Structures are given as structure tokens and as C-alpha cells.
Amino acid sequence: MPGGTLMKISNVAVIGAGMMGKMIAFVFSSLFPVGVYDVVETDLIGQIREIAGELVAKGALTAEELETRLSRIRFISQMDDEAVSSADMVIEAVFEDMALKQKTFSQLEDICREDCIFCTNTSVMSPSEISVGLRHRGRFAATHFWNPAHLIPLVEVVMSDATSPETAQTIMDVLESVGKKPVLCKKDVPGFVANRLQHALWREAIYMVENGIADPKTVDDACKYGPGLRWPVLGPMENSDMVGIELTLNIHDYVLQSLADNHEPSYLLREMLERGDLGMKSGKGWQEWTPEQVEQISSGLREYLIDYQAKHLH
Image 1 (cartoon, rainbow, N blue to C red):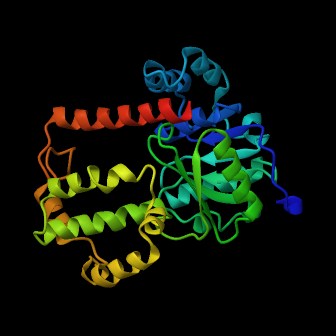
Image 2 (image 1 turned 180 degrees about the vertical axis):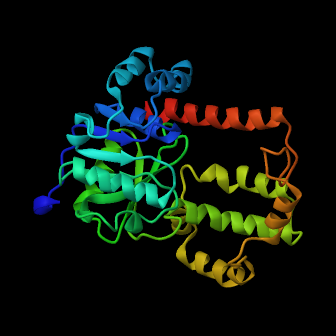
């Protein structure tokens, strides 16, 4: 960034009006005017109003606040619209396709100012690879919003091999200003931070089922009614400090040698796929699912997240 200083963000553009893009726009509309570009015309405001209406119904947002935020959002059908060309920050939210993302940022670099910050919303793709062809790579980073983007507080800010510290800090500050809980991933590694932690747990969970240690429901219950209740207020590093470093070392000396360390997916996953057991969408995965149970899980999760918004972020 010119002069190595943090940039003041006054307006934002979002590229891609899919589910993630429209709700990312809603997040930033709490403070900023937001232009949203997509190749397909869409009733952007109507769709956001319908989704965000859940927040109003639960008291996490007033009807007046919703309308004020919607008034700051504008759909645009041309990428070179002033909402993009004059943007201080652009967040790309197109499909998870490397060539498409690279092409999108190549176009943006010809439209936007040299000091405009570029962010790619990706859950898996390398920001170093996405930005490899850009002329000004220091102003580029990944921002991994978790779905649903307007309800999950976490956003992972992932530095590429060229992201400047000023760019990363500016993004962190802006995300915090709109109510998010940003975390900084200092190295461009597969899975970033949260997915690495999540899938380390999944690997152990599947290993226990595969080896007859516990059935799927037992594994889920052990997480939901035990350590899962602590996680919102006590992370693993804090927990280690709480129990003490000496005990942490002693436990690891004893238990790590018996934990899963496979580097290939479990054969159970491949067998399930071959049988057509695809999870909730097929009615059977690790367990059987009725449409009513699927709806109960889905609605229960959304209600939990909306309640969190109402209690902590409003």
C-alpha cells in the first residue's frame, strides 16, 4: 500500500450476487454504501429483505434498521460502473472456479484504482494462486466468510505470499467495524485456520466410527453436550492454559500416539457414496434422515445463530 499506511474505507463493491455475495453486501451495508455486480439481473433488494427478515422477526434488527441498510445497497449490471471503479474495497464472491476468479480480478485491475483493496471470498482456494497474475499483488487477500455470511461472526483473512501487512490490517479493521470477528491466517495454507481445525476433528470422529469405538450419534452427542458447550467461550489454546502446560504435555505424551493420523479419506466415505448414501439430501448418510428431521436441524441452526446475533452483536 502506498506509503505503508492503512487505508480509509468509505465504499465497498461486491462482485457476484449469489447467496454469499448478497449477504456479504448486507453485512457491509451496516456502515457503507455497497454496489453489487452480477452478470444476471436479480431482485437483489427483495431477496436480501426476505432473508434478513428473520433478524427482524427475532428482534436482532429493527424494521427501520433493515430498510436503512437496504437503501445503501445498489445492484449494478456493468462491472465498470462507478460503484466498482471508485470503490475502496472490492469483495469477489463468484463461483469457486480458479480461472473465473483470476479472470474477474484481471478485469477489476483494469477498472479499479491501484490502491483499491481486493478480497476473494473462498473457502479452499489459494489467494496466492488467484492473485498470481495481478500487477499490484500487495493489496490482495482472501476473506473467507462462513455461510450464512450474515449470521456467522467469523471471517478468515488469509494473506497470500504477497499481501502487505497494511492491507491485511485494513481488512481486519473494516470487518471488525461491521460486526464481524476476523482472524488472521498469516500463511496461505490449505484449509486456512478454521477448516483445518474442523476437519482434524472430523477425521478423528470418522476414525472412531470406522474402528467401532463409538457410533455416529455418540460421537455427535459427545461433541454437542461436552466440549462443544465450552467452545464459544474457551478455545483450545485457552483451555490448554487453563489446565496447565504440564498437564497438556502429559496428556499428549499419552494420547497422541493413538489418535487418527491417516492422510487419505476413510473407506467408509467411498462405500457410502457407492451406495448412494449422500447424507441429508438422499435421506441417509451416517444416519437416516426424514424431511422433517432435516428441516428441524436447518431451522434450529438458523434460530441459534439469529439468537446469537440478538444477544451479542446488536
